[in-house]
Amino acid sequence: MSDSHDRGRADENGAWREELLAHREEKDRFFAEHRQSPLPDDERETFDGLDYYDPDPACRVEATVEPVESDETFEMEMTAGQPVEYERVARLEFDLDGPRELYAYRRPGEEGSLFVPFRDATAPEETYGAGRYMEFEVDGRIEDASTVALDFNLAYFPFCAYNDAFACPLPPAENHLDVRIEAGERF
Image (cartoon, rainbow, N blue to C red; front, side):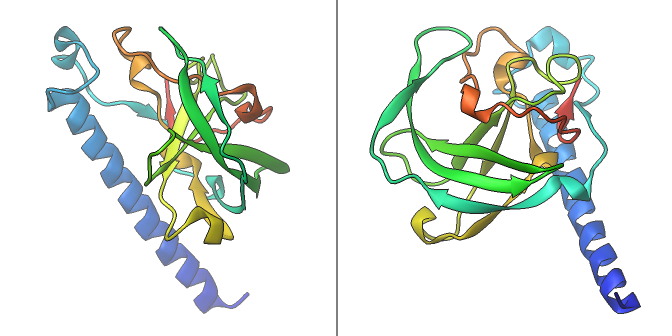
């Protein structure tokens, strides 16, 4: 590859890294200061930021989108309380230390972002044992999308990891990965 191509990739990764670090700082401020923070009030005083894996550009992958052609819903188990109804919207195929797949979900009747709960081999020692989440937007209709970017560096813990007062969806078995994804939030 040419030197100019390598510089372009380095510039792109530098901008991505700065944006990711700014996102993390904003999230830390939310946890420390916002009235809707999941942290109990007594923990906010000593809170000095969430723990993250170092940013890793290799954990930003392009996923092929295969829309799920079904209106069927299923009940996703929760950390507490009754299961909640979701629908499978798309199957996402990608390569991360080999071929992988995850499903993206949405609550019936909702539009907007897609929800990708997953559990990987870092749980429960390094990441929340119940799993982590990602969300992303698709430009236009999911049926028209051929690929989407999945950035595991944005993987986050559900609020129930910080406070038992929250009930959170548990990643279904179909979204359990047998690989370590050392990106995003960690303990």
